[in-house]
Image 1 (cartoon, one colour):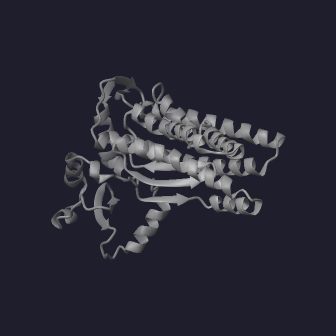
Image 2 (cartoon, rainbow, N blue to C red):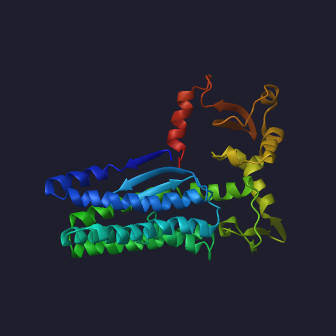
Image 3 (tube, one colour):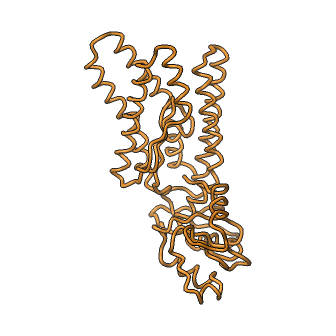
Length: 328
């Protein structure tokens, strides 16, 4: 795992805990949150997922993994469920060691607060993510996010109404934090969709179950697709090759590619069809990572390596990535 982070809002809650004499409450909260995230983390490790980051919030933690979007649905579901399950098991074991009624009541209060909050049907909390993954069994990948975000906003509206009836600084802070996180996640949706398609092409994913669809918006996880285009049909891999490799589309997008999972055919397509004659003569290696491919009129005219001293100015490239890159 690359790093563990604490959101800035944790400092505010820590400060409030100190001045109100509730430090033990906060300590218990972070202990249970840590156990909860360990449940996600170790289950993900069983499936060889690479944990990138865990960020702790006052209401819970959000773990980020560099797993495939097209991994088995049951696999992702188990990773999500094991967080709350591990927390519940720890609570049942830990409470047997407590000696006073006050400690038991406090532990129970913290446990159920964290559990209920994390299981709220709001993305990207566990509850919202579980709903999104379960929906993938029944509807298209993009539709699963649309339905999940609708449910998320509806739930947040309910929380806000509850706050109006029972005013509480705690509920107000939770509402603001979750709303901001939901808005941030919505900005990533286009990236998730593109990664979903790109993975299927680069890894040449093929499934036993097949569907005929009229648009890639109806692609589903664990299905291969045949796209109906007027009076003729196109195989999914041919369709995705057109989407990402033909000249008309390669010029208009900034696309992230995880080259550790890219097939040799993909590089051959780039070298044979899109590398300019000038770059071919320079024996440019497109497998060197990370790099930026500068495309003009359907041809790759420049290759910028992040660590390469260049007239293209590495600082400008890094600034460009910071503004446009979604590093998730």
